[in-house]
Length: 351
View: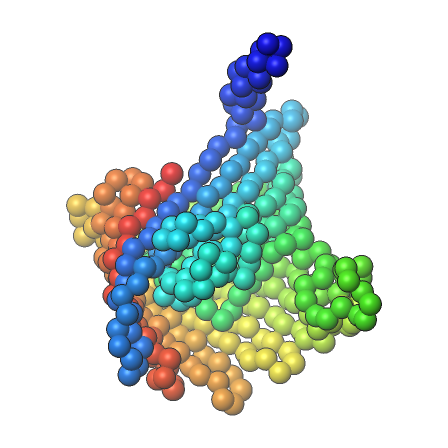
């Protein structure tokens, strides 16, 4: 009987505890069907996920510590609606498919998108855990007008980085500055003979910086990131990489336009890539919006393939939380062997 009373007391106290800490659940689910074909191959009808928005489930909570200080946690994981997967199964291919199953994403982990704890106040915010190193990772989505379809390809900044620490400044009339660092930890390479656990970190380090202006109709950002990557545990860094990005977007009322330019300069034997994305959207009335985008990837060094990607879409907002998308996508490359076409219809719901 005492155990029953104790259980009832705990259950009764839980809502008050959650309210005091301001804990909330949020997420987004998007799935649909697509007709996909490559050069000289038969078309394939398949399920698609996260074409425009990334399907996810998250938990966040804030505690007021007094004196203007707040502690905040965020736990967020990928979702694959068509397969019931969570954690490592977000669609990672360009066309939104996940043919490798629920564990198709290389990121892995239950909370593969974010797992962080932050302390914030008048000084800004300090965040540590698994998180974006800076706002540089999101400069393409800042001005993109077709969601995930306008993300840069081949110029990847420190997004969803493990073992990270990040600083975010207060908002100065629309201007925020962020900087982050990947804390030394084993990120790959063979272990020395006889070593079965990670006891010595690599010399791999990543430093990231970004400044973003978002005020009224104008959005703009600049990002810079450096990476010194070791190829084995305990060895010196052998490949130096630099990432630079610029983006600007403007809402003209009758249409929104965004331009993104990203560049990756990689040391060693890897390839340098420049990615340019131009996108636009225009409201048509009755909750309908027309979307269009073009992305061009230019790769240096011999043997590389330059690729252009085009998308034309129409969205219909059924409510503030639910939207239907119809998209036509195609890619054109130098070799043409990997060119694809896809016509898709999907629905997304935020909660």
